[in-house]
Image (cartoon, rainbow, N blue to C red):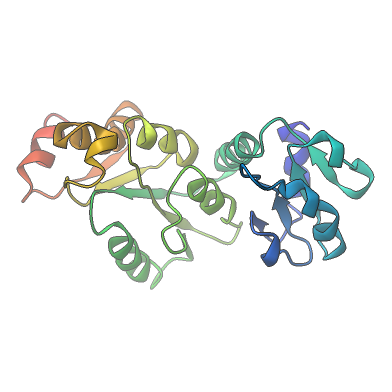
Length: 223
């Protein structure tokens, strides 16, 4: 299945979901499978429940006549579809990360911006390699801007999420001691979270800095 061809179908959908229990009429269902469960077995049921299309990674369940399409990886296809959609959007996106306070900060930013703008934002804490693409794909033509929360437990994760969300503004709440094992220590946390700053700088975008945090001031010196 080609991203460009599928995008035309995506534009007709109400929403994208990875939860078969939440499939409604005109939705697109991505059948994510685990070690002990093949979600592709739910493809026909999803279509029966009104799904516009289903993406599976088990060729045995492909049925293009019913808009059930096979791809090598549902995750990669979801991420690539989100990247493609982001490229079509002409709105500013604010990304935020940090060790603590991401979700609360995201809610506050959304509450303020939504007073004037139609603003989409990350639902709950869906801030990982699946949640960020879902957030991007939830942005509709009527939205004027978006707030995207990004979480990470290892280096290069924020860097990757930035390639999907392509933010215009970014804010790091703080550098704490969360996920030390994955990051390899506090310095690893600082380096990993600062990937947001690195992306914004390399793409000539805007950084919001907490000047009361000496680490943030140091990391953004010369921006």
